[in-house]
Length: 450
Image: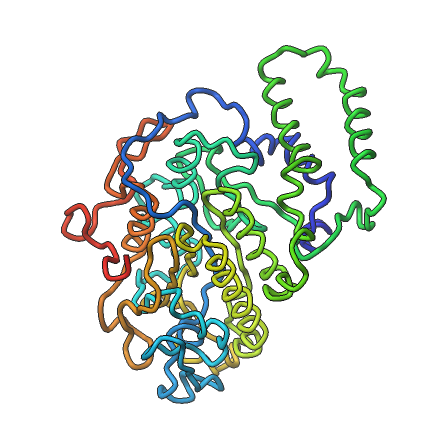
């Protein structure tokens, strides 16, 4: 792991490296001209949309449902540990963890699904199921929701924004190929860096002195030394690289840089979100959807708590509570919540029974039998609970909801037909989602909150 990867920051030089070699490859290939064979035909099977964008809060590692949105205060110490209190929300009859007091005051804006299930306890396969709606094992890697939205609501609708239509803040999920058989054009643009850091860092040195003028001078020097580029001028392959370079510099020096500059936000608003990576990522996500980016994922790690679970939760839950509630409030105040879906979920939950024994010493394991998801905005109703778990949160007790059902509901609100064909460069005869139980179109939607 490089020093840059370890400290979570990205340098200007690294931005260019990603775009100009290999990755420009792929880091911004979405915005460049690719071969015609890699461009699926414009999809036609869409329905009237109520939502324009999605902000996915991806709880990498799997959050404990019983310590967040499905508390079980009466389950006993072996299940609750020290987290044995639930608090009321601003919606009668709905309670959440005592560690989510800010989110409790915004329960009228979101709905909780307490009966998510897929019975898979492996990170890779569970993440694939939750993010694609497909089961693994049929020798085809399906695209995740972000890539599908990038197809139907991005390039398929003539998206021309500077920022690619599918953005991940700040690291790729890394558990599977997000674009699947759609190909590299539909991979997410992972921003890297840390939106909570106010300045770029170059080779470990704070680069306050690297002005835009100096950056342009470096570019001129790069071109002066590029003898191969001069010889190959006019070659279509080099023209594609030149187009990628233009996009990269526009992100560094142009309007794209302004969009990623959080110093333009009021200091008190930044404080409301929390001056940490997750909090500022939520604020960045709001800025992106405000500019029309169809799909933004916040890859929020640190939830794989096999050991020291409660110690970790005492740090993570207040951070999540603050930023998530600020995002909902901010979107609502700006009139964006009606057209922006917010989707909170991990690949599974965590074992309701605490693993007190060594070597876990108070941890929680993987639990795909029953877990939570939260949805808000974009046509989803607030102030509702879908399904229920049993008294200890071990199994679904009522209204099982599978990842395919939730994703189908998201697609429908975006105007994407979940039962329609999925255009792709390989010419595969596939649907957007597999058939629901019973095989009838429309089955499995979350109608009670749509």
